[in-house]
Image 1: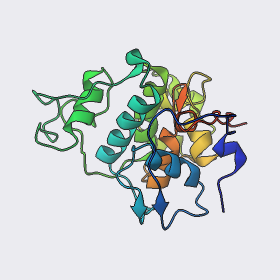
Image 2: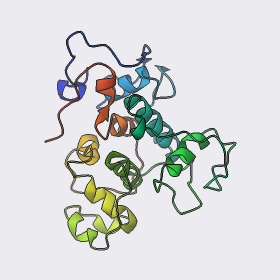
Image 3: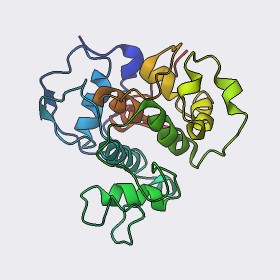
Image 4: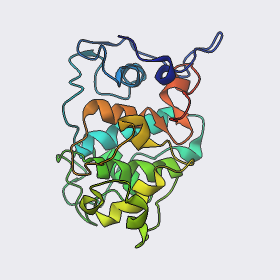
Length: 234
């Protein structure tokens, strides 16, 4: 089953992708809700492969998500230098568990060098740990906003619509609340729809991660592929 028109966007007359694209032949994404996002991002060279099994329901690690996020951002904004994230080339490493020798150092350190708070603490990143829902939102919403979101001790009261609000890490609450702002891409609504419980500690799947980075700030894979951006969630 092909992705819905709402998610796919509209093909522009005589439009061509803004970057070179690759042929995508994944064997296990047909009918997946993130199919269009996965196809677009693989074609643009954001994902790690274009063939074989994508494993859409497998969890994504924190390092893998940052790698996809940074690569996507720099492709969507290839003509907007101020919105690009510079890849790190040298140390010293900010995180003791992501040394310069780590293959994802350039992406993780690069995002940290840009000023974003992305670690589990000031000196650890936990690159191989599965990314959780609350962590995705805490990382992604600030990138959508173009800067870190200020802490707010009163934020819990605005998240009472989630039945499991007490399970949300307080430091992530401002970003989760801001995710509903018109200045972000409304990740919760796009990825999971209407939620009564956020399940903040639940691991994010590879398909969900692809949906999350399908749009960043006012850029998107759809536009890079020569289509209009899809309408925001209602």
